Length: 158
Image 1 (cartoon, helix red, strand yellow):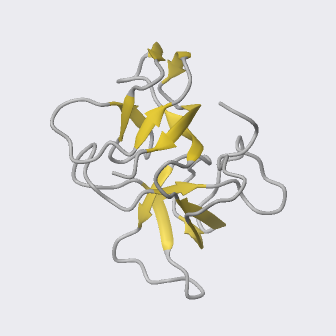
Image 2 (cartoon, helix red, strand yellow):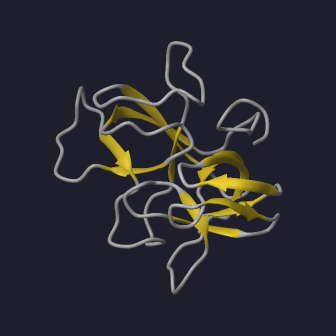
């Protein structure tokens, strides 16, 4: 992790989108629009990345820290107002990377490509035949835990 924020760009070029949260995700989680859910106050509801399989293409939206002084370590609760960030290619963020399976002690090297895990919004090293590798690791990380370790990454744009 670099710094103490999710978004590391001093002059962000992506898009900020407000909404409400479904579930209890931590900042740095990849999010998708919650299907079949009406807007609340005109804004969408976001949930942890939920596609048909790991690595399926979807809008890349990263959950940012909460409002009112919340930090990257403070989980959201269902119904809470949130802000996600849709990065531009080349922007750097701290995102939640996970160990494979339920283990701990995995490591990641600079340059490793990551895919989103269906149902959790966490990122893991590329496996199998996937559609999208949205992030590339920018730091060496030892002891990545299954629950997610904030990791300095660059958005690949695909």
